Length: 213
Image (tube, rainbow, N blue to C red; front, side, top):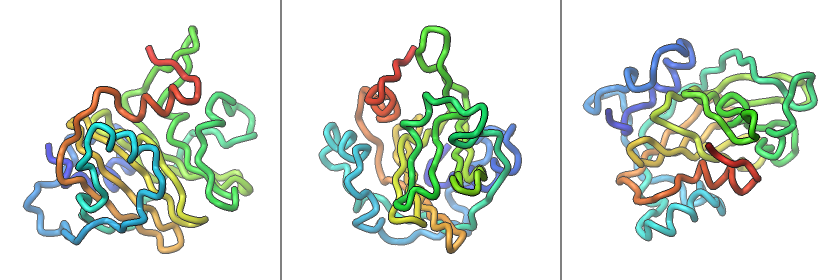
């Protein structure tokens, strides 16, 4: 499967979670894919994700990402519990990614992994990406990925734009930029594969004291 065309992973899998991501990728010759120039230079901000992969890949540059498609955000229901609501597990609190005003946050983790009996992280096959309005106590799924793709980190540009930083089983990184006021997201694809031993998703957990099995 080609990561260059998995934009349907967001649109279709959000509506039908049980369908695996690898069966939903569009053919690379699909004319509906809009190939556009490189990613914005400020997209990465000062991302630890970017720095981690650049250490082993000196040619890992923002200029090698290109915009593949722009599409509407597909909001879906979620069972993820909101911060400070009954049932929220405090172990996830350090991983919540807040916007500038602390009014909203992105939750990458509470659907994706859970602490087992020895305190280490055990993983679900799939990952749900959730947007939470903290003051309204409302949570909505904005993306859903099968086991071949992982959102490894995220950050906000101000209050209204969230950037998701991902990697694939084939070691091809990708980026989604969500503009909530415009109700659109952009999908960026890297033009090459990366060389690394430890994925950033593991580094992120270990940096916050979570051990892996």
